[in-house]
Image 1 (cartoon, rainbow, N blue to C red):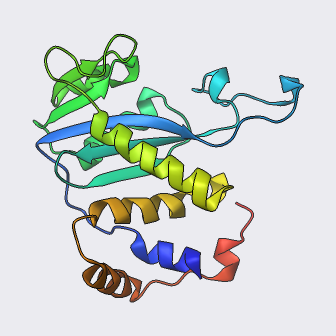
Image 2: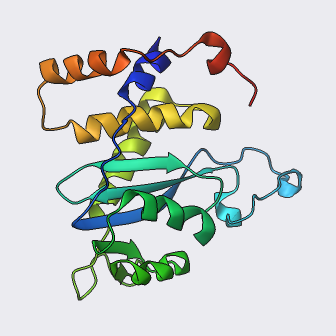
Image 3: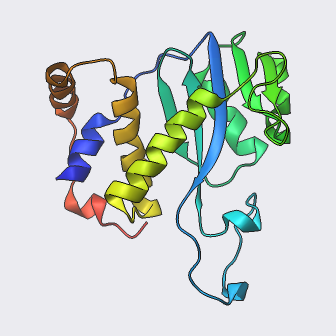
Length: 196
């Protein structure tokens, strides 16, 4: 039932983000518990310190909504199409100094912050709002749900995205919004428990 409610919370908007937009990725999951790491294959695009974790891309419009997706890796060819699809060209993009964001300059005003040196660059670039969202998400997953499987991580993301985007609303309107979104959506047991 909870997964059905989370499914109803999924945003269906086609509206693109604009203005000041932050983009960043994070990794969700626990630490490896086995002493012998030789049994684990590191997926392409992941550093060994993130082995066993699921990559997630997020974009956030300052003073607006957030969007996030589970992605197969953190390579340029995976991340940039999501940003181009969801952010209006000409917007001001703020990212960390990761090399896979360098091509954003072709469509956006792009400013970066080097987290090894500072939280906010001299030009005022930062991704602190998105880092705040990641913190809330990870505390919910670690403290409430404890062991969210990668297969279902999209549903947990939908829930936290809905909470973030509706954070200024009162409980009544939030409840009504979820009930409205449930109309016409069906999540069957077979779909939820499918192996793929």
